[in-house]
View 1 (spheres, rainbow, N blue to C red):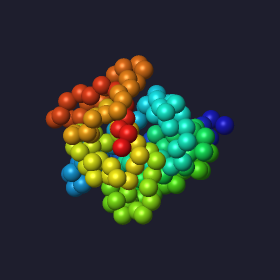
View 2 (view 1 turned 30 degrees about the horizontal axis):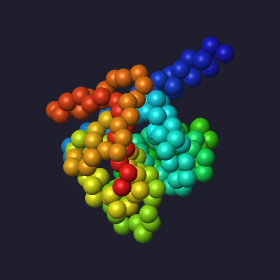
View 3 (view 1 turned 90 degrees about the vertical axis):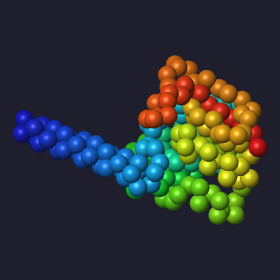
Amino acid sequence: MTVFLFWFFVVLLAGVEIFVLLSICENIYSVRFRHQYPPVSCRARHGQVVADEIKKHYPNAKTAVDIGAGYGRLARAMTRVQGLKVIAIENMRFSIFVMRFLNFLFGTRQIKVVFADAFDYIKHSNKQFDIGVAYLGPVMNDRLKELTKKFKVIITLDVEIPGLKATRVVDVPGGGYTHYHYVGKFPHRLFVYEL
């Protein structure tokens, strides 16, 4: 039994180290070659606030898109909204792998996971979507203006869409902020745009 536990922890530690190494490589690739911010980790309370906002104000929404889904925490939170079909779009392979694994682990199979550039996928889709949710950061949020004709509502986390006036601003309970290197700190809140 002792030998089994020893090897179990060795394999577990090796798995964690591989995960961290792949995550670091993906972050470097994201910044260096794609010229975008590395993925920002979404907290459970962010997902809860987004799901609550949709339930309260948009109970008849049928489709939601997680734009730049990362590991899929926001997408999984949105599946709590009855009748909402969720599409999670991500352009980083390791994030897609982790998202699919976590969706399997938590039993959230109703999420459609798409490996693509979210902006290209949405722009070239012949569909209209009810809600778009984005936790992208200051530089990428500017590009959300390109997608306004595809959504009835866009919700951004922490960072406004430049040039658009939010319909509502919702503070995330517990406070805190996201720090984007070379740009600054942004308090946790939702910006809701009804288009």
